[in-house]
Image (cartoon, rainbow, N blue to C red; front, side, top):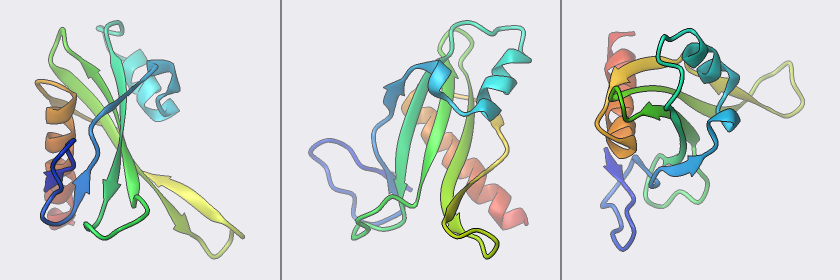
Amino acid sequence: MQRKRKGRVPSGGPYWTEPLPIDPGELSPLIQREIDQRAERSGFEGYVLELYDMLEAEKASGIFEIAFNPKISMACAIYEAEAQVEQHSGPVVLSTEPLWFAASGPQNAADVFYQLLVDRAVEA
């Protein structure tokens, strides 16, 4: 679990890029619905990060979309990836369900979210 930082190349994968700020309105409708259901709807910032499986990978394996609210130190995130499905001629985008968790910042949110995904995969 490493992140690709400016000037530093990770020793292996998986890793992800630095959080890129985006307008919260550009976040997935799944995340937007989650935010709309919260009492603290305002103050969320949007971020996207590309996830790579290994250092040699030329194409991202997926993305993290993160809504982070610094006022309440909470984040909501999803993982999205393209997959080939027999019933479709081209790739389709698959997504996890949105997960809520405490975070201290957007980079910390990515770290925590990745670990939550790993922990859930082990349980499955």
